Image (tube, rainbow, N blue to C red; front, top):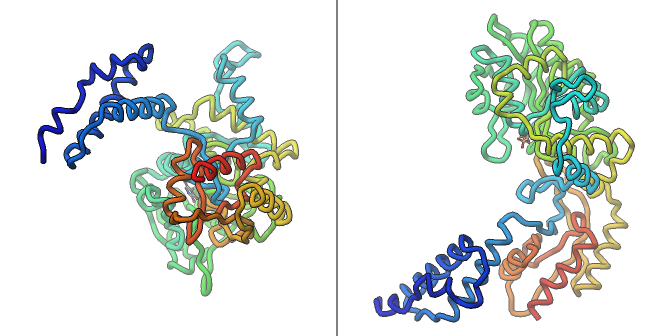
Length: 444
Ligand SMILES: *Cc1c(COP(=O)(O)O)cnc(C)c1O
């Protein structure tokens, strides 16, 4: 290693004092210069001589990245509508408009304009939820994971919660039903076997300490073949017979059955509710098409108990969540559910997708291919939807290198990558085409 190279590294003050950086906010500029020098130092350690002009260019580039922020819009060309890594459900424009009008000013979040007294933040979206699901009442928390935790903690802490062995699922790494149960203070009582659980198994598990019977939507896997499970109705009956609470973690929440059966055979939350189950929880940003939230609907007396748990204060949602959910729920109630992007993407006809792919191919010069994609977000695990994509390749560039280029574009383009790079049009809007064209054009 040549230590003389390190001596060639510029002082921070020299960079910051450069004419071209005058007027820029110091904190960000210093950080950018620091990172540029660190990069040059690492290169010097590998024997590369630092070039002052290059370090300045680097500083400018890092500054511009830092000032743009790390969270940004990306283009989802994977064809997976509820893509957890890409932020799950995109919101309808009208929900964003409503959000803006509420959060850029003051609102009656916890203020009753009739009486002039303090109001309840949860009743806003709960009113719509009651109509949509047929539940007596509802409450909203941070996400469905916290909903599960809150329900178990409120009703089964220090007591027993009965659950089928076939439903002890793991959803995306950090959510495992047995672990959540343990953390909540509930004692898990497993019944049945991996592939078969009957109502009698629940009945037989009842002891003096049984507080709750839980059913969990399997979400990201299915048990096929020699299998059997107790229906929601049966679990509700078993719990009622034992004088304890029945609870369904439905995972994803469907409000209107407008999707073809081959995409989603799940029933609606209202259907689930009519099985006689006491409580149901589900995510706000899976099939419901809203934002991150955990929605708990069911018996009024039980919802009231949930609201009184001190944990509620820690899991409570902001006005932003309530504003978004209110406008998304309204879309369902007014027959406008197709304005919710996830619903539109999932119900899009194959002819429309074919035309969209042809249009993209004509623009960027690729080949239209048929594709299959999943719903995502742990919803409908076995469903493969037929779609169309446009395959592209660039001479002298591997698909991995092309993918990397696209991911690092100003507005990153996230494609499907196999032997070739493919843009699945199910999740694309025609307004995205130009970005894809520009990103590819930069390689010519
Ligand atoms: C997705 C899912 C969860 C977790 O929901 P989040 O809203 O992501 O916290 C819990 N249970 C089931 C069955 C799920 O499918």
